Length: 342
Image (cartoon, rainbow, N blue to C red; front, side, top):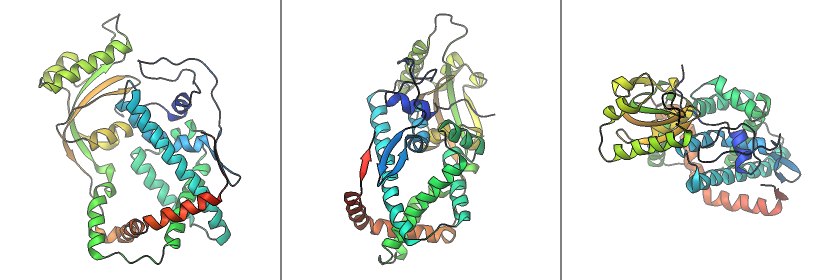
């Protein structure tokens, strides 16, 4: 059974952030939604007559939004800044993708289907802990078909191929550059399905069944007060026994050797990125608010350099040609007909 920490569907939340208020969308207790129409789909941009839809943007934003929603229960300025920054970056990526696709089409080239399948599996593993059901649920919420997502993935790979072809005369990667790049990205290449973690957790439900006057706002305030006590040195186990409302409260909130795959993707991403012994939270999910402190992490194995050498070499080439590429894509942007709708 998955642990309960997970955030909201981006599709509804995306509409809310862009002022299209969604009905019955869970939001922060600090802000209540108003009723209103939901936009089924819309145009995010037009590039040389080709459409980039809001659904495409929202699907790519979904994992980012889920983590931000969990980390910022009160939303606020920092939430908005990071969300809008991510949205702008993704929209620019999709616009650039359409520009490059026009050039790729003229070449008459193609991407092998098996490579697309492998890339989709990689994304599913990295963003959804390999949970295909969760992945397909997010597709459904974003009103994207699997075939539509395959096409998005194909387009992304086209961009990578075009970039490699455009700068194929770049100087070859040197051995020390390859090793340095491998060392830098090695943790991200590991088999995350084999990650295991032990952590302490305090769970504060959104509504306390034992306190009839409790509200989501008062429960969040309680979680924040507990966080303040922990920051001042109060014992985590004692506070867990006093306040936590889950099955591990009597054990001081300690959960040992939990596989990453038993956690929701958002919760896993947040706590595996945190340092051991560092307090994280309050984190929000539809059930309530969680404080967590990673105790010990055992990460899955990473592939050897030889197994990923071609990919590492490509990353080095991309870095070497980044300035050239930026100039090249900027010249294409100036020639393209771009109409941003959001």
